[in-house]
Length: 277
Ligand code: NAD
Ligand code: FES
Image (cartoon, rainbow, N blue to C red; front, side, top):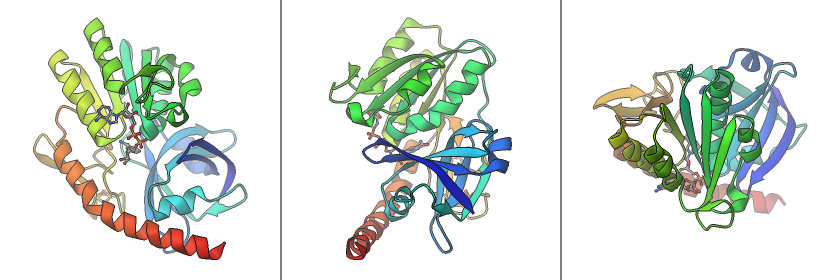
């Protein structure tokens, strides 16, 4: 059992749970993730490890409530516990040793770039973070990222920071030059747009793919993605890949296939939850 030590609402549908998991806190490296099961028989949910506290033996999980299972997880309170946390899974980020990295976080994806930015800065790399949200209340991890370097905040509606998508700020940085690598994590259209933007500048671009995951071990095939025309598995070959080689269309199609199931499950969960209260 993994007791919940702290809980924070980061944006209208994004919650951070700080959970006891000493073994994972000890060995996890940036870029890795865990698969969480709320309780016996519950759905398995892949989540990034946004942060760790090795002394306290805790990990921070950032969860966007979109389906029934993620709503169930985000409704947990301090004192509740999560039954299973498997991990750390996936390959750690290949970190630059010097130079300038731009870390682009779209919405909840900002929690995924945060540990990468932190580790790059610890390596002595200059880090510029570009983070975006629909409006001010959807911007997360701004203060935490400031500890690693400059942060450019963008909002779609212009309610905070620069108006517009993260890609507009990224374009200006690319034009200014001197970037060694871009890390982009967020919705699929954002990662695709970032990768297309950096391609003509020949800037290495790494994306973290949020494909459907089940076992997290390379056995079930659920997370398969096409990289440079070849099948790879996001759970064990990734989750980070060269954005210039990813077949984003296939990724979007596979994610869309499950959206209808998720919607039905969410409606059932909402109805059951309303009855229980
Ligand atoms: P969102 O839709 O609110 O977008 C966040 C920001 O991304 C926007 O403010 C904008 O700056 C940028 N963006 C969005 N669409 C863009 C486009 N077409 N071109 C350029 N920039 C664009 O994001 P959200 O609701 O926080 O995220 C939801 C999505 O993120 C879900 O689909 C989820 O599956 C995905 N996600 C991905 C990862 C990952 O590891 N890649 C992790 C968690 C969630
Ligand atoms: Fe099953 Fe990756 S989640 S192969």
